[in-house]
Length: 235
Length: 84
Image 1 (cartoon, chains in turn brown, yellow):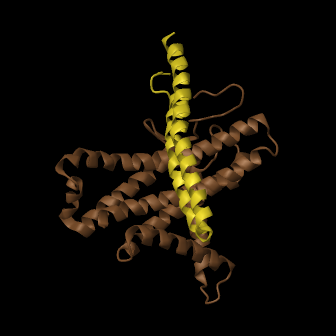
Image 2 (cartoon, chains in turn orange, purple):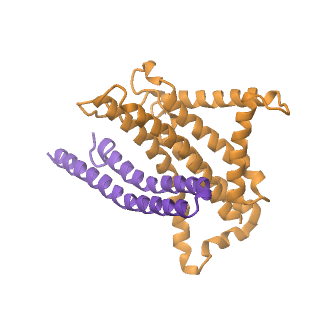
Image 3 (cartoon, helix red, strand yellow):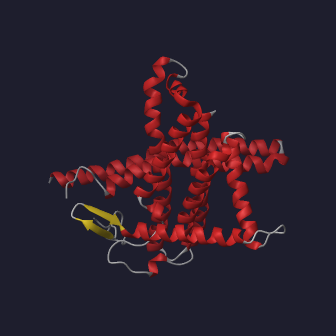
């Protein structure tokens, strides 16, 4: 699209894979998210394949992750319903954490593409929009499944004139989830890029550490909010 | 001519968006951190819990700034009013 002349910052340029005339894929997002999914599956399969009473190194890492995700789910959804939605929350948490960390830790820039560059999959607004829409579909069906048709009573909850507000809220929830994750990841990468173009050595390191911290916090927040939205409709 | 006018307006709009989006959350984060320090000073054994809650709520407030940033970025790099 258009680049700032002082430093080569590219926003919105992608490595397109054309399927036919009017549909194309963002190749770099697909590649890195496939990498993240395969890596996570391999890691979890290997770490849980040989469970022992005295955990090995890998097994204890997986146990810590499980405890964290379970505590998020229990505090948001209560002890009686959390087990149905624990896989969803855990999947979201692991995927977002894996993609954010893969964007921050792995030096993708060493691999040259013809246009665009490999980066975290959450750097693309389509990925985060997909995650947010999945969340809203999940809480809608969770409410319908657990409360039946009485789910729709939620829309007129404090009083009847709250109906438009409650309907608008159903659209703003995925929108804010989407923008929060996308904006945080892009802001991290832009800050690092701008500071790298000013001073390429040493100085960007603390910013990179901050970005690492913030991106893991974003995974936690995305999972917490998804669990909170589900817990809100089934309580 | 019209495109360059729109570009200039977009740059100003981006600056205003980021500036004002940083204003409110900045005050809010300062308030939250101050209250947290007060809480820790009054009850030092609750430090771990307070820190966890503080970080989570700081990240929530941060996201308000990020909304402004997203608006600014889309105005700068993916402007819907310039058809190129």
